[in-house]
Image 1 (tube, rainbow, N blue to C red):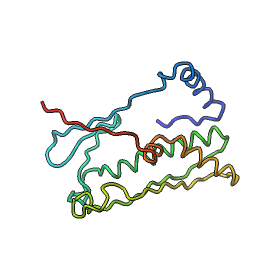
Image 2: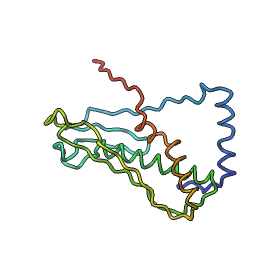
Image 3: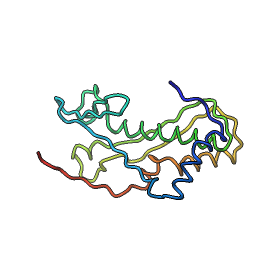
Length: 174
Protein backbone atom coordinates (compact mmCIF):
# COMPACT_ATOMS: atom_id res chain seq x y z
CA UNK A 1 0.00 0.00 0.00
CA UNK A 2 1.53 3.35 -1.01
CA UNK A 3 2.33 5.93 1.65
CA UNK A 4 0.17 8.99 2.00
CA UNK A 5 1.77 12.15 0.57
CA UNK A 6 3.44 14.43 3.11
CA UNK A 7 3.92 18.16 3.10
CA UNK A 8 6.96 19.93 4.58
CA UNK A 9 5.25 20.47 7.94
CA UNK A 10 4.22 16.81 8.28
CA UNK A 11 7.74 15.67 7.33
CA UNK A 12 9.29 18.01 9.90
CA UNK A 13 6.81 16.67 12.46
CA UNK A 14 7.90 13.10 11.77
CA UNK A 15 11.60 13.89 11.86
CA UNK A 16 11.74 16.47 14.69
CA UNK A 17 11.67 13.97 17.58
CA UNK A 18 14.34 11.86 15.86
CA UNK A 19 16.58 14.87 15.28
CA UNK A 20 16.15 15.96 18.91
CA UNK A 21 17.02 12.47 20.15
CA UNK A 22 20.08 12.25 17.90
CA UNK A 23 21.32 15.65 19.09
CA UNK A 24 20.91 14.58 22.73
CA UNK A 25 22.15 11.01 22.22
CA UNK A 26 24.41 10.82 19.15
CA UNK A 27 24.94 7.07 19.64
CA UNK A 28 21.19 6.49 19.10
CA UNK A 29 21.62 7.69 15.50
CA UNK A 30 24.03 4.86 14.66
CA UNK A 31 22.03 1.93 13.27
CA UNK A 32 23.52 -1.30 11.97
CA UNK A 33 21.89 -2.49 8.76
CA UNK A 34 22.59 -5.98 7.50
CA UNK A 35 21.98 -8.33 4.63
CA UNK A 36 22.52 -12.06 4.46
CA UNK A 37 22.90 -14.40 1.53
CA UNK A 38 22.24 -18.15 1.44
CA UNK A 39 24.75 -20.19 -0.55
CA UNK A 40 22.98 -23.57 -0.26
CA UNK A 41 21.14 -23.37 -3.60
CA UNK A 42 22.25 -25.37 -6.61
CA UNK A 43 24.39 -23.65 -9.20
CA UNK A 44 26.28 -20.37 -8.98
CA UNK A 45 23.65 -18.41 -7.07
CA UNK A 46 23.29 -16.62 -3.75
CA UNK A 47 19.78 -16.04 -2.38
CA UNK A 48 19.20 -12.80 -0.49
CA UNK A 49 16.07 -12.12 1.54
CA UNK A 50 15.21 -8.44 1.06
CA UNK A 51 12.48 -8.47 3.68
CA UNK A 52 9.94 -8.12 0.88
CA UNK A 53 11.05 -10.90 -1.47
CA UNK A 54 13.71 -13.54 -1.92
CA UNK A 55 16.13 -12.54 -4.66
CA UNK A 56 18.39 -15.12 -6.28
CA UNK A 57 21.55 -13.48 -7.56
CA UNK A 58 23.77 -15.14 -10.11
CA UNK A 59 26.37 -14.45 -12.73
CA UNK A 60 25.65 -11.77 -15.34
CA UNK A 61 25.49 -13.21 -18.88
CA UNK A 62 28.70 -11.27 -19.70
CA UNK A 63 30.48 -13.46 -17.14
CA UNK A 64 28.85 -16.76 -18.04
CA UNK A 65 25.44 -16.50 -16.37
CA UNK A 66 22.20 -17.57 -17.99
CA UNK A 67 20.39 -14.29 -17.27
CA UNK A 68 17.72 -16.01 -15.15
CA UNK A 69 19.09 -14.73 -11.84
CA UNK A 70 19.45 -11.17 -10.68
CA UNK A 71 22.82 -9.52 -11.26
CA UNK A 72 24.36 -7.99 -8.15
CA UNK A 73 25.63 -5.06 -10.26
CA UNK A 74 22.05 -4.35 -11.30
CA UNK A 75 21.01 -4.67 -7.65
CA UNK A 76 23.61 -2.06 -6.67
CA UNK A 77 22.24 0.36 -9.28
CA UNK A 78 18.68 -0.43 -8.16
CA UNK A 79 19.64 0.39 -4.57
CA UNK A 80 21.14 3.69 -5.74
CA UNK A 81 18.04 4.57 -7.78
CA UNK A 82 15.73 3.70 -4.88
CA UNK A 83 17.73 5.64 -2.30
CA UNK A 84 18.20 8.66 -4.55
CA UNK A 85 14.50 8.67 -5.47
CA UNK A 86 13.33 8.56 -1.85
CA UNK A 87 15.91 11.16 -0.84
CA UNK A 88 14.91 13.49 -3.69
CA UNK A 89 11.24 13.22 -2.70
CA UNK A 90 12.05 13.96 0.95
CA UNK A 91 14.23 16.94 0.03
CA UNK A 92 11.60 18.23 -2.41
CA UNK A 93 8.98 17.92 0.31
CA UNK A 94 11.16 19.80 2.81
CA UNK A 95 11.75 22.56 0.22
CA UNK A 96 8.04 22.78 -0.61
CA UNK A 97 8.51 21.48 -4.17
CA UNK A 98 5.67 19.42 -5.58
CA UNK A 99 7.01 16.47 -7.57
CA UNK A 100 4.03 15.06 -9.43
CA UNK A 101 5.99 12.13 -10.84
CA UNK A 102 9.02 11.23 -12.84
CA UNK A 103 11.84 8.72 -12.98
CA UNK A 104 15.28 8.21 -11.52
CA UNK A 105 17.84 6.22 -13.51
CA UNK A 106 21.17 4.78 -12.44
CA UNK A 107 23.48 3.48 -15.16
CA UNK A 108 27.05 2.26 -15.08
CA UNK A 109 29.60 0.46 -17.21
CA UNK A 110 31.48 -2.66 -16.18
CA UNK A 111 34.48 -4.12 -18.00
CA UNK A 112 34.06 -7.85 -17.58
CA UNK A 113 37.68 -8.46 -18.57
CA UNK A 114 38.58 -7.49 -14.99
CA UNK A 115 35.91 -9.69 -13.41
CA UNK A 116 36.96 -12.69 -15.49
CA UNK A 117 40.69 -12.11 -14.97
CA UNK A 118 41.29 -11.67 -18.71
CA UNK A 119 43.19 -8.40 -18.24
CA UNK A 120 44.81 -7.63 -14.89
CA UNK A 121 44.81 -3.91 -15.78
CA UNK A 122 41.04 -3.85 -16.33
CA UNK A 123 39.15 -2.70 -13.23
CA UNK A 124 36.85 -5.04 -11.34
CA UNK A 125 33.72 -3.04 -10.66
CA UNK A 126 31.99 -0.11 -12.25
CA UNK A 127 34.10 2.28 -14.34
CA UNK A 128 31.55 5.03 -13.78
CA UNK A 129 28.01 5.48 -12.54
CA UNK A 130 25.53 8.08 -13.77
CA UNK A 131 22.43 9.09 -11.86
CA UNK A 132 19.70 11.12 -13.54
CA UNK A 133 16.24 12.38 -12.67
CA UNK A 134 13.43 13.23 -15.07
CA UNK A 135 10.86 15.09 -12.98
CA UNK A 136 7.30 16.21 -13.54
CA UNK A 137 7.64 19.37 -11.47
CA UNK A 138 7.78 23.13 -11.85
CA UNK A 139 11.00 24.31 -10.23
CA UNK A 140 12.94 27.56 -10.42
CA UNK A 141 16.50 26.98 -11.78
CA UNK A 142 18.24 27.88 -8.50
CA UNK A 143 15.88 25.65 -6.51
CA UNK A 144 16.50 22.83 -9.01
CA UNK A 145 20.23 23.05 -8.27
CA UNK A 146 19.54 23.08 -4.52
CA UNK A 147 17.31 20.01 -4.90
CA UNK A 148 20.09 18.12 -6.69
CA UNK A 149 22.78 19.29 -4.25
CA UNK A 150 20.78 18.22 -1.19
CA UNK A 151 19.73 14.93 -2.79
CA UNK A 152 23.39 14.10 -3.41
CA UNK A 153 24.35 15.20 0.12
CA UNK A 154 21.73 13.12 1.94
CA UNK A 155 21.46 10.00 -0.24
CA UNK A 156 23.10 7.21 1.76
CA UNK A 157 23.90 4.94 -1.20
CA UNK A 158 25.22 7.82 -3.33
CA UNK A 159 27.49 9.05 -0.53
CA UNK A 160 28.68 5.51 0.21
CA UNK A 161 29.70 5.07 -3.43
CA UNK A 162 31.35 8.51 -3.58
CA UNK A 163 33.19 8.09 -0.26
CA UNK A 164 33.79 4.37 0.20
CA UNK A 165 34.01 3.37 3.85
CA UNK A 166 36.62 0.88 5.07
CA UNK A 167 35.43 -2.59 4.14
CA UNK A 168 36.55 -5.86 5.72
CA UNK A 169 36.10 -9.49 4.71
CA UNK A 170 36.58 -12.77 6.51
CA UNK A 171 35.84 -16.46 6.08
CA UNK A 172 34.79 -18.70 8.97
CA UNK A 173 34.56 -22.46 8.52
CA UNK A 174 32.04 -24.72 10.23
